Image 1 (tube, rainbow, N blue to C red):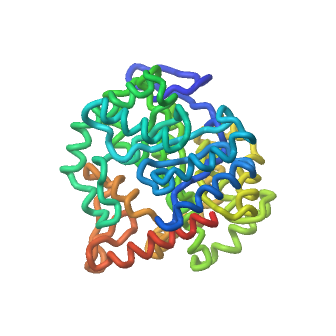
Image 2: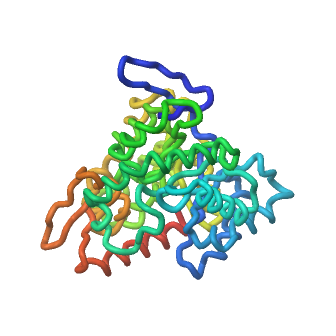
Amino acid sequence: MAAVDDATTTTATTTTTTTPAAFPHPLIYGTMESTKADAHLVTAGVCAAVRAGYRALDLAEHYESSKGGHIGAALDQLVAEVPRSELWLTHKIDGMPTGEYAAVKARVDAMLALAHTDYLDLLLIHYPMPRGTDLSGDPAAISTAANFEAFAETIGDAWTNMVKLKEEGLVRHIGVSNFYRQHLDELAKHAAADGPTACFANEIFVDAAHPETSLVEYCQGQGMQVMAYRPTAFCMNLGLLDGVTDALQATAEDRGLGSVQQLVLRTLCLRGVAPITGTRDPGHMASNIEAATSIDRGAGVEGGADAGAEATADLALVEEQAEMVDMMGGCDEYAAAFASMGGLNEPKAAGGAWRMGGIFTGDAHAGARRKSSERLALFAEVA
């Protein structure tokens, strides 16, 4: 779907396969706050991350850190140290940008003003639902046939607005987030394989327990960059997985790494996936950068599926226990809900509750879901 600079394209009778170049930066710093009250702390986190060596940031219209101008404040502090041209800002617009283009443009203008920049390197549609969708309630409410039908009816309008934003120079690249194969198939009706309407990237939930191998390979085959959010979410449950901790640590040491977290980041980079981490710990920042920059990422991308399979094998023990990871809260409920839209990955009944992609849903488990989300958010501070 998307062509990337210096990519090579091979056209068959019915499909176009494009091998993407490596993402412009090997590691991305996430700016989502752990709680609304902590949003102001993101300013110091961004400054520390950039000073440590991060050069790519991931923002979102509905993050409190963005709405409060905390990213812009950080960039102001950094302007004398790192020029804007050396930074890559990815921003996500809340939901599907449908309707009048003037209204969509006004939202992006406000995002730019709050970030204290006059352009974005990449703008993503944050999720395949209308703006303002409740992402704190029951995830099962998202994955309905009606919601997917509404998405299919509006993606053309939304993408037309995205293309206009690019044409007017507000953004340099356009893409999506939380889009799965069924969403991408609909998008393909409106986005050419290359040129101004191309989809540059897809930001999705990927970790060792949920490698999304088929989706990643499909995106890369269509020329899209893949960005991974919460790539180390499973690590908070690592000690509870039978026989896994010592084995993964041994593998990490065999690869010249000091931790399982570094092994996960290395694996993603070898797969040509750009991981997003949001730690505020300087030591973790340094180790993350070390893991992401100590390999030949270009070779990983060029190696394609073979390189990805070899790297993923290092984490196979975690994927084998994905169901246990999910039951302990090491998954993203809403990613699973988006993946289930359109009738794919239908939820299965389990123990009187609905289970989606390993996640229990329904009112009886609302408290458990909240605790899971809180744990993931808190873990992001040290990941």
